[in-house]
Image (cartoon, rainbow, N blue to C red):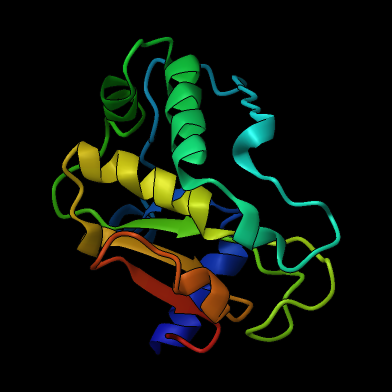
Amino acid sequence: MRRRDFLKNIGLGMGGGIIFLPEALKGESKSLIKNIPATRVVQIHNPNATNWDFASGYYGDYVNQNLVDTMADRGVCELTGLSDAVSAWQRIMSSYNSGDKIAIRVNFNCTETYYPSGNLIDSIIEPINSIISGLVRIGVPAADIWVYDASRTLPNRFTSGYLYSGVKFYDFWGI
């Protein structure tokens, strides 16, 4: 199976989120989160995380990475009921074993090319950087983290903003 076909199948078979690829390939089920109700949802909001005026330029250029990091840490703490982000990420990733590959599926359904088209909203890199930060802080090597959209192209505006060397990016074209 070619890498592109493999990624397409993952994209079609998974609704998104974080998955463990070795178990997905073997057809085994592996619970990602222990001791957290499956129906638990948290909402984190900070109006200062962006200062975009909904008209000027590309909205992704107006996002404050530090505030997004703070929001992500607060979110995992609220999700797990723990008071520090590292412990929260450890709980969320309690089934992680060294060497597992972690894939983060992003959504670029509104992207036709490598460049923004109009004001259609799709993924931005800042929340992905925050997730990767949490994973790296608990010992997941950046090289074991994959960010992908198997059905669309990952725009340069997205991939050029990553903060962690070694993270792999894959899209429809297999980059």
